[in-house]
Length: 159
Image (cartoon, rainbow, N blue to C red; front, side):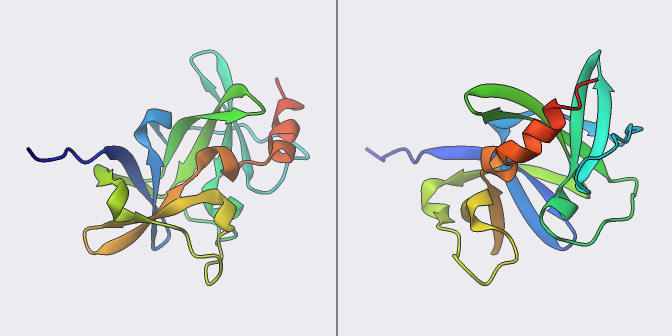
């Protein structure tokens, strides 16, 4: 009898030339680019907030958060609405991405530990590197992408 491999589904998305992935269980929805209300005195990666069916959702520019160049908005630019857990509380945050790729299944055997150096990305943000389609995909630990200080700044801006 063949042993069933445990796989996880990940939503893959692009920032510049890099492909990242988030566990689909954390993704609420994907929105087309919409108008974002700028909030004064927030970090540069904090693009502002959007109104999502009556809820105020902060939007983070993932490129700026990861120290990349700010992107030009295209028809593919989208907001990935994710649920994160910070200090035991659930929060909904929008992550600005250049484009959404696809949902992929990856078995734990396809995922290796993130390198401790050699990447501009803080490795605390990464669960690991997934090997998919002959290339590496950076699997984000979405709860660690946002620090409690970032979110305190966001919560202080509740509109």
